[in-house]
Image (cartoon, rainbow, N blue to C red):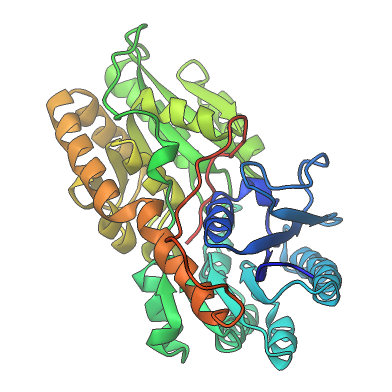
Length: 428
């Protein structure tokens, strides 16, 4: 039997060691006196404990199918459901899983919520993505114009409704997600907003614009390369920027990986911008920090779809945490995150991004003002230190009878030396 209250976290879309939000949640729960297990797809086969944690157990499962269409996604999710269900039942029988947190996508785990709640155990839904909107944003991403299938959309909406309504409580990544949950019938007091973003300790020193030794100014994109992420738009913007200001004195660095990586690389070759566009691949936490500290401008290329308008991109808070000026399409939650630390373009077209980057590269005084404003927003509102308390409080409330009497307040433990954290995913 677990000595302390035990929380099991379920993830289906990526390995635990690559989900920076879940890493921070696990560290926060450990600091608050909980034991934690994460059930997620297998990543690094050598890992048994989450990197950087005290003793968060990993129970990975193999992924046999990766979805690329409606049918293959259904097969992938069915396999994940089976693997997660088997491992979760094992946790229950072992005397753990006093509470469970499920992270979407997908929104298919509500039958397990019914089981856990029938056993009298809390089920918390950590709402990462709006699945109906994600589906709509991916339709046509292959260049073929078409409308989302209405029946698929209806099924996804129904699954989201069931996922929200069967949860004991909901953790939302921003106010738009909270409003969505309330519209689906969740009582407002059952929804807690916990934003994405790094802790202050993850950022070394006081960020300031570095003077590049080679005189080359770095413009950076950091995140997932997926069909809905519009990384292709960054490559096209680089081509337009090269036309506007030449091919020296700047470079575009694309950090991350994903299913669109091959097509993005092909596009860079086709547009002959490989001399000004650099691909780094997936980066761990220290490498992310170093990359962003050496950059002068960050790009958020997400197009103005409904999903992007309502979502807070994890990369955006990574940017602003280092005081980086951000160029982005004019989106509701992006404005709420950045305020005056952002430059907003109307439609997200490559020409708009190129023009905004060109102007900002020539205006170091404006960049410095934006850096100061961004850091102030991060330190006063956005950092994980401001999210950890409300997040831990959800489980302290739900498992109050299992917790020992409080001694000291929960704090976020310092990351252990040598731990790895990847480039951030796009989440809520």
